Image (cartoon, rainbow, N blue to C red; front, side):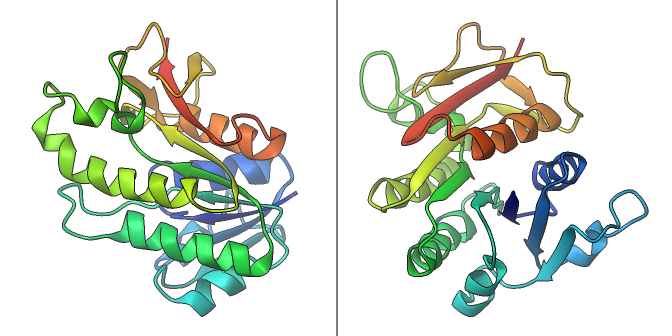
Length: 212
């Protein structure tokens, strides 16, 4: 299996790269500083470090060469001051559709899950104000996926902890998981996103996740 990962140098992305290589997958890791990923631990012929710009259509299109699935873990400013998550997603979707690719697993935030009383969590009056700006960027990315022709899965994690995988987590569909401990190790999130890209689970669904 060949996977192209956008946002490959971030907290979750770098772990997806390593886990995919550990499974023997072919990996194209896309990013502006992606050369930093090449070290003694993952230097092998199955990793292609693709230095590119997420808003450049030609870069994004070329990075998808030979891909069976796309994983987007794009980051950006937490205050919503840039539009990397939404406009980057728009470009990825356009290039996937141009290339005829279907499978996309993308990273958002917990606010895009359903609230029990209707609507999204981000629309609840008690939703933390400091998360609204970045949540709106996630929402725009999600809405772009909804209107696309892709077979997408949209992960909506709580607080992401800089820690490796434990395998001790639960997932849910479209709603927050129960119990919800409001945190997930970056390694566990990477593990599940990679698994979903491989097994075609959660197609056209949002995914809640939490460590247990």
